[in-house]
Image 1 (cartoon, rainbow, N blue to C red):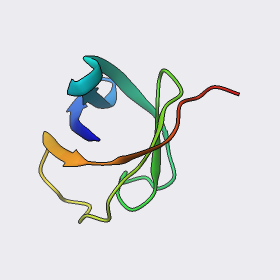
Image 2 (cartoon, rainbow, N blue to C red; image 1 turned 90 degrees about the vertical axis):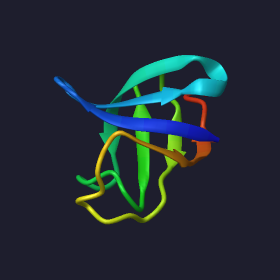
Image 3 (tube, rainbow, N blue to C red; image 1 turned 135 degrees about the horizontal axis):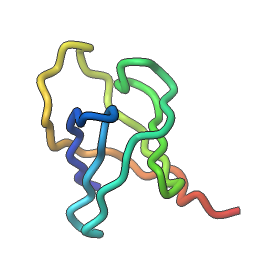
Image 4 (cartoon, rainbow, N blue to C red; image 1 turned 45 degrees about the horizontal axis):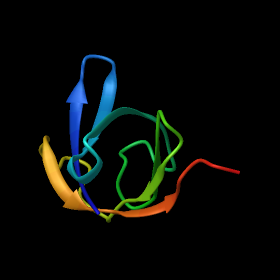
Length: 71
């Protein structure tokens, strides 16, 4: 699923164009976001590709949704 990651005033944010959803990143497996999972404010989790920690943002990429945050 395509998502766009950007750095906002309160931290990282993610936009999912297919769902017209914009949520803050509230947790991540790794501090730099890349190579693990991230969790959005609505509970969705995405597996992130392994990228360099200094990757410029905003960035649109393919990420696999691994959880919808429901039970």
